[in-house]
Image (cartoon, rainbow, N blue to C red; front, side, top):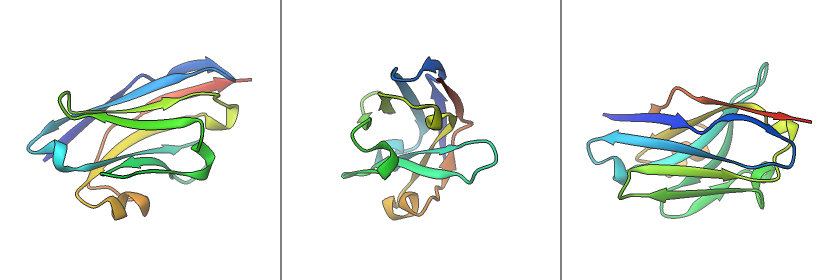
Length: 120
């Protein structure tokens, strides 16, 4: 079992930056691939980025978002810069033993989400 807790969301102006954190706990949590996803009101959940040995990014975040992990702290980060109003969503992290599952917008364990709001 892996528990995930996101933090770092908030209100930011367009062009600003935020760093989201996903703190993991549980047995061998460092062995899992971790991904970030987001869901805006009225929209489907979408993949944002994943880290599982190799990093992956959705086109929407390439060049603006960076995923990183600190295994010593069991924490995965999503650094977001040049934020746009269309980045407004609830951001979730998820863990899976399979990076492929994350890339398919699926995960075995999910956090509760953190709200990111980008004002224009």
